[in-house]
Image (tube, rainbow, N blue to C red):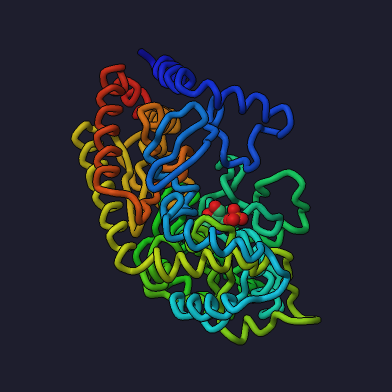
Length: 462
Ligand SMILES: Cc1ncc(COP(=O)(O)O)c(C=O)c1O
């Protein structure tokens, strides 16, 4: 059996189980371009449509139950419908949903965020993209400079200001050491995407080259402390320290986009790596499933926000529901203790998957830290250090087969996209982790029986 046959079989199983999703998708696609409201949510031949979720489980419209390790793209370290949150929010919502005024929880939550993520001041928004946009605006206002430096493959939201060098085709993206500023969307004006310089993740020379050429004009460097939109790619040892040094040397603002990492480690990336940026952007899991984001920063930078200075507004900013949900999540659910239990479970999954894959001689890169990790089936044995490695080594056919078969067997092992990762929530149990691992064993056996080894031989010659 060739790879196309395996893919067709796997797709057939998926379609047989998910007829209502197919129907809804076809109908939605009549009204909504691409049939989804976020481009990153698509899957072939169509994405699942869900109806309810609780704890570690989610159910689709056909009634299939899944153990969910996607957790809304990392937005739910609490797990689904956490009883504490449901209870608290149900009574809170009776007082109204939005006031257009601050509440006492604006004060309480500010204190908690400043303390937990150790920064001087904070501003609330709703989504990651809004917050990264404020962060870069602040960096430009603070330095009076034009350019933002980002890394190829890092994602900071789908706004014009940072939709550059996202997942470029290498042939269009220039030399790996001096990547071009490739716009990641139609409709982004050249004047805007040219203000974003791109360097290679984990490559000091690449960063030095950009600083050599533009150093005095670089307002800020923005990065995901662990790159989690091109798989799961941690910084090499010393790389964050290097970025701290070079930004200090050139007077540029160092921005950690912690939209994902703020909910993967109790104190976010600073606590895990021991490096302090000038600005942090936090979001996703800290909101317990409600839209909440915040920009935290050093006082002299943050105090630039104000009338006739740096603008920052939003009708839904600091809305009482999101603020209260975040307050409850951080004080009662994402505690240090419970997060470290979830981290241990994540590590257990990572180790077990690594063992299964290497026992079966399936080339793969398995990596984990905090509440997250990922398994990436590769063309040959390789570690992934940047976006070019991801393109070169990750076997997208193998990823499709793995993810789709796992889903058909009732486990969403990581988000259903080849470049995403898993999130272990505080509601996941050992039984859930075992189910993932047992199902993965089964899928890998099946793949081997259907000639998957042969497929790899072909790919290895690539
Ligand atoms: C690291 C990172 N930054 C920013 C964003 C954008 O967040 P949002 O989708 O809430 O705008 C995301 C979303 O996945 C992200 O992963």
